Image (tube, rainbow, N blue to C red):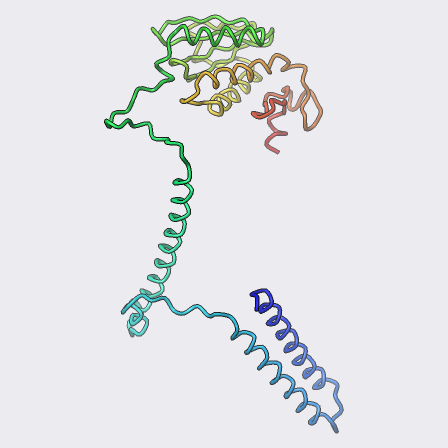
Length: 285
């Protein structure tokens, strides 16, 4: 018999037992005194039969035996109340360890079926240098040249910190952005208005406009989202596409509410998958 059939049989027996017990109380409340004793006797016989059917249905289930924890089962027989709780704690610990074994077995099967070797440690035990930080200056400039030509972005690269560069971008006539890079890894971005100064001494100061402060916060979120040490050039290209989407910051409408402004601000958030504009409140709501 299938497990579902056993469960259905048990539930049917429970319903029959409850129905027969309900009939007993109904007879007691409104039964005829002359025939009440005989009717109760018949109902009690029915209850006994239903109870036996329920017991036989329950016995068909394979009962789980007690946990085999050796001599620790004698802890439950201790007269001291402090020692009596030790057995239940040991049982909970056993269940927890048993679950760890199950999850470890499943994780082992998943990891062994994956042929990709993700360890960055070489056979000699040395950790190779990070590829994203070892890229040449020409590599970064070639990637920026490709991105700016594709999105029609005005770009200027300065290197006040040696090999680490600062990328100055003009996103349309909307705002200016400064991206501080270490090799090809983007580490910081500053967003300023079109009429604001964005020199080296202004890299760590926020814009005086609230809208560009919001945009800068969202750009930091996007920078973390697109971050990749294995494919840093892809991260740079994706981030440039993300920034270029802000060239219609003040003309796009929110995809959720369909309005230009919410609390006096345009839709400053961009969906990281399809770059659709949203107000911050609409996205979080």
